[in-house]
Length: 261
Image (cartoon, rainbow, N blue to C red; front, side):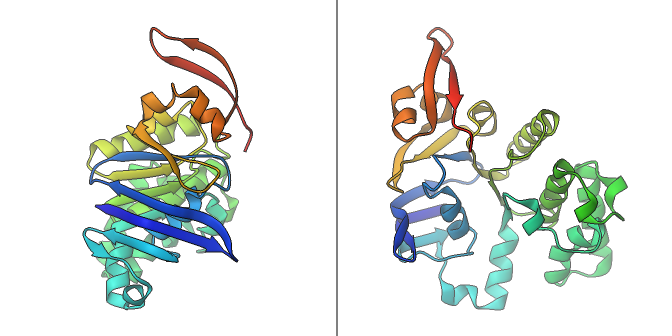
């Protein structure tokens, strides 16, 4: 479904991604892991068509995604309908005067009639149990409530792929637990889930596969999430964990002191 071949990208001459090749199949739940600045967010932006590679190729459903194609309004609408992006900071994603209009924005941009838009909005309000928010202004909501509205605004287009950039950041433990269970549910329903995260305690619940980025902005490892969490030396090498202090070999239960990012 998603294929990157020898993709590189630089900001003002400074590498953000270096010769990255990656394949993600339909229905997978994949975590992107690595220290800050290793390239995870840049990769997500490329996958969502926000930026284009300096070199290499990106294909979605066997079709190469290029700046020229994304300038075609019809193509861009279809592409962005299939991939939904939940930003790390919900405040950068929410801009309408109330929650209803926020969720309705995407379907309206796609040209749906208002009856269908209303159905989509109500379905998403119900799915995320935020019916009471629909008339409220997004900037008056809590961090967890904003995250739910941001996810609802993406799901209103019923994308095939849901991409989330550090979705656990800033959430209280109860909301984190809700989000974990929600992502598991979406994946079981057939959605492809791609998540960047530093949260080693929750990553094995929201992904079956982990792609680890090194500080050289290339892929250092690509393996089952449960296996990666046992590769302590590798996690230390890429500066994702600070100190390994306990392990039970019998159940492969690993504890870490984590960097605070």
